[in-house]
Length: 172
Image (cartoon, rainbow, N blue to C red; front, side, top):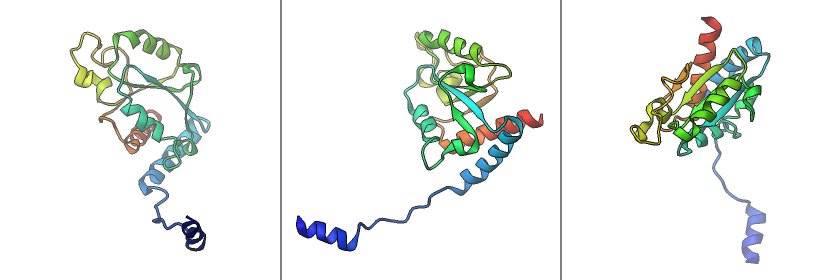
């Protein structure tokens, strides 16, 4: 064992060089930051609501806050209360048990507000469509401003979607 420790101190631990950031993330993030700084006073807050998902979309949304994507450096943050949010991001197939909670969260987001639907399940119920426990998505229940498809969508798709949404609302 002492030979191993001596070797590690002498030689060090060998590892591959990794690329710190994805160029696409940087390009999209720079555009997002410019829009958020100009039109949202440097901060765009999102309240994420899981309406009955398998948590795959939540893993990808959570990845947005890790050091690789670090979406907060672009001015986007996730908040615990819908009262502090500019947008509500909904995932999951909208179960009957969560329908009222989603509506309350939506009503508590101050106007003007954005509704972002993330993942295939939230669109129409996904693979659970037609189940007695599912409301078959939110398409007829809330005015959705942005649909981000995928099962689950990758973090870069979510960043791209946010940019498209904000550019469209600001320019149009």
